[in-house]
Image (cartoon, rainbow, N blue to C red; front, side, top):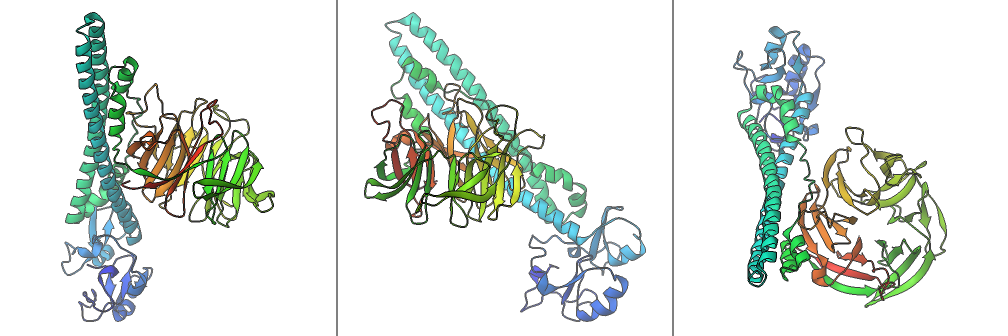
Length: 561
């Protein structure tokens, strides 16, 4: 190989390419990729290529960390004793230095900097496509499991109907017709999604094969002439499936056909117990809207609807309230500087002093917008969901997710997609991953329907997750509440009305869901990671119940995610 990565300091495997290996190589020309000794650099190369950039091998160890695919790996067709140094766009061929000077003078060339940039993009695209292919296979497996689950429910319901039809034939014959029709409709939707997945897999596999062939054959013509086409194909955006596929469980429950229908549904969630209750606590507030662990391992819990903010300490099985404030907040987090930041729906985030109860202005200002939810990242950034004062679920006004550094300087604004349409309606919750992906729970209307929007650091939409068709139907639409990152590759989303938590990967693709009722928890709402590696889950009470002001807080272990 002709790269510095293949030339260790202790052992040089390639000699100078200008004096045919007589001297040890110490330099590399960035433009024509020649590896040369000091003598040839000064006496030969610089005399014929004064404007070329030459670097010491010790300084370019990271210049080309990709697989071997370089101009100097190929010998010139016209001058067999010369390695190639560039690609001639005019003639569509790799050429050596002699060709550049004599035959291709005045032609358009690709220099090494451009080549390395293209190669990096294509190689990264290839790697991402392989990941997407694996995720598509996982998704395909999930859909096949759903189909099997629906088939099991159908067979059980059919058997039940046939048994009941002995006494009331006509009525149950109609139910059987309804059951068959619903099953046929569901199968059509699932089969359509499986066909879509198969087509996406085919597209990725085809382009992966082409790039693999280019790598192995070192075909520079295919690399440069098909670069844009290949890169576009590798970065093909998987359109999320948005149709609300029904489930036989809805029909079965409505007709009281199978008492085991609920068990059939929860079993689909993969319910080897992902979560385990370590401790359960009872608070004196109605809803744990927001939940944050502080550096001293105490907690802040907020009931937004009742305008209550409590600083609590968990002792044994009890919740000890250290302080109680009357304040309505929309978001809270510990800032990179260690301050407790809260959003009161004003233009500027506030700093809360727990010792004095004093609230002061922070440097984080989203004027003229109003700040809603906020999230502090591990790399010292603050992310704020903000909207126009008059805007909530209407088409007017602005709705933005803003990233700031710890001095309050804007780093990035996410507001519009590639077609200049608004990305968000109402950012309800925000989290992020170590690879700079941002997850936003976006509520889209007054009945709490929503979605999870996944953004890359550059602003591209990676994914929009709109729930899972096995639990989110037209009768039970996806109403996400809270999102939290539990590892570098796993995201958890709470859904209040179905008592479900959805597990996504760091691309926003569905992995599994878990019915939290399986471990005795109802109405999950807010989330926070604990310093011990556990997960805090805050719940809400039903209006008018005897326990209206006794919302539960759980500390959970999680595994197998």
